[in-house]
Length: 75
Image 1 (cartoon, rainbow, N blue to C red):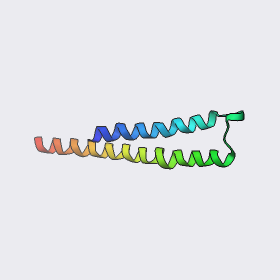
Image 2: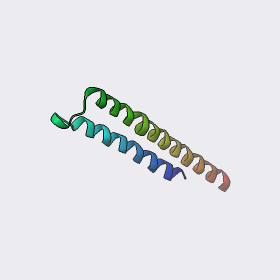
Image 3: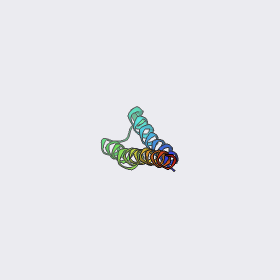
C-alpha cells in the first residue's frame, strides 16, 4: 500500500508540475490573461502538487512502518 501511495502521490504532483510548465510556456495569442494564469497556477499547486506530495510522504511513512513491523516480527 505504501508503494502504491508513493507512486500515485508522485504522479499526481508531476501532473501539477507539468501544468505549471505548460502555463509558463504559453505566449502571444495563446496566453491567458494575468488573472486566469494566476488562478491556473494556484489550482495546480493546491489541487495537484500539495496533495501529491502529502500522499507521497504518507507512502514513505507506511513503507517505513511496514519494514519496522516486519523486522520486529522476525526478531
